[in-house]
Image (cartoon, rainbow, N blue to C red; front, side):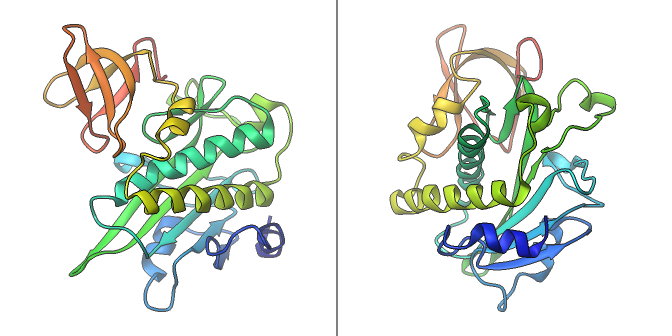
Length: 266
């Protein structure tokens, strides 16, 4: 994968997503690059892609393994149509985009572990990290970072039981540039629905079709106290609805808690 292959695969597929391509053979993190370089000269839909990352970032300060020649690491910049309260919802828009493309392109079942982990074969295959910069007038820009394990590889430590790759699950190699182009095209379409409605209501049904937590028991790791319940789906703004044993319904916010399956990661 290189800049030329990305441009070829993107040609005619999107109107604005990937409007500018910043490609690196190796960098610290595409989110860091996007954050540092986005300004007046970088437009809406700017794309930052790396073959390898030295400091891949995950949620809650975790690192993301980012070897070269195997996986897909990219960040997309959004500078239009988002208020600060709606910006976190784009994480779910991207999750839906990735899950749908993986299913359509590979034929393998891919699901979403709320809110934004993509799971295949019971293990994590993709992570998404959304960061925003606030200005005096509200959201200045949003950066959505995506890391997808494409080719089979060895995972060490606690990743050994939680991570996998598309090749390992689907049994075939996937073209990274083509996969990226399809994801951006899907995101552009879903994002248009999202901004048109002002929330996730047009995407809620499609998202819940991929939501592996739905109708399953989950453990909510809330700092105020852990509890278990059954996940019912999401709200129009992306929170997870969980019915507790006593029948009360809790609204779970992604930034505050973690959700795990009763018997493991999912």
